[in-house]
Amino acid sequence: MIRLFRVFVPSSVVALLVSEAILLFTCYVLGAYFVLDADPEVFLLYDNGFARIAIVVACLMLAIYFQDLYTQLRIKSRLALFQQLGLALGTAFLAQTSLAYLRLHEFFLPTWIMISGSALALGLLPSWRIFYAAVVMKAMRSERILFLGAGSLVREISAHLTEHPEKGFITLGCVEDPERVGEIAGLKVLGKISDLRRVVDEWRPDRIVVGMEERRGRLPVNQLLDIRLAGTPVEDAINIGEATLERISTSELRPAQLIFSAELGPHPRRVMLQSVYSTIIAALAAILTAPIMLLVAFTVRLSSAGPALFRQQRVGKDSAPFTLYKFRSMYQNAESGSGAVWAKKGDPRVTRAGKWLRRLRLDELPQLFNVLRGEMSIVGPRPERPEFVEELEKRIPYYRQRHCVKPGITGWAQINHKYGDTVEDSIAKLEYDLYYIKNLAPALDAYIMFQTAKVMLLSRGSQ
Image (cartoon, rainbow, N blue to C red; front, top):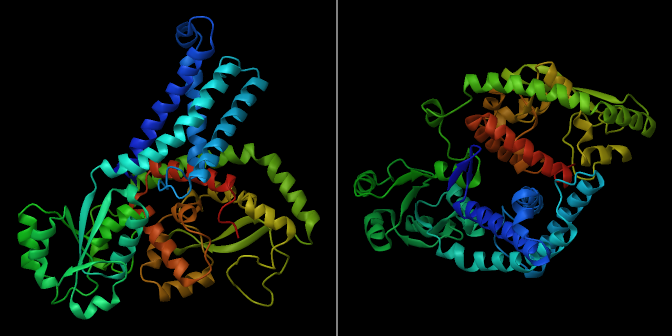
């Protein structure tokens, strides 16, 4: 796996990105040779042809990315794949039409080059996708993993790797004690823990992952040391879980791993830098969206009784309370009878206008002023209400540690996990928050903001 933007990206995904960029570029270059009467090299070299093609390819790959075709490489339906790629080509045509309408002639492709190149792409790209998934991915070397123990995290990792072969790992199975075999789901048991050395010699794994929930008196320390000195890497399940699941599991996380971790963030310089660019981005965004905010405020006032702006206490950095601003999306005094409760799908407290505001994330625009006040960042953990924080800190280990950074308008948990209304959802979001805190950096923030734009455009996760 390759680490880009502080995120683990499978080598197979990077290879697919590069290969498709080359394929698409070639299609439009060939399209120029097919339809131009004059020398195509004049267009390509002296009439900005290569740059124009690059714009089309960038639009196409962005549209493919927005359809999750670079996060899920397994092809479940060829017809669906063809439809998705056709929609991506339609998006590229729309972008070209927009450039033509704006009379930016030096940036869009001539009509017949666009048509011929797109026809080639529509024929070759699905075929390449199918071939890549069936042949190339299998030919690429995958690491063979042997699990020592079969705890809940191991089962979760194994199921995830089975669903996502592009991650580049193959699960051989596990070694576990006989009395615990009945608890294992989806994992082949290759032997007992005492047989670890024999199993390693027989199966030749590339890596051993230790995922025993109870290690005291059970961990075969001497066998592991011999295997490690013989050249086979031995790794804790938490580490490979972080790389594959992109979150830090709390089920097997021990305080010592946090206290003595050399990588645990946040780094003070990165936090200071985040404050600077968050303020700049918030100021620019507030200016650009001012007309939209005025329109939204007017709509909220017309749609139901009550003020346009909603104020609510939230918990910020170092557990300090602050007042969060949002456009009101619920009826006034919606919690007068119930008290503080989580929002849920189809919440009857949400107004008709509020449903659209939440779907388009427009209700969160006033939080830009929280960023300008220094209470929030553009990216960070979601700020929770004091009533929920008090309860969650009692029930979830390490929950208080998420308050070591400023909360954010968007965040790693927000783009990777649905809006949840249960303790289990809060645990999952905490694990994403811990990953973010550990890896906090401008590159990761940029990636999250880019992903947020995708979530907003596709109206995902609203509630």
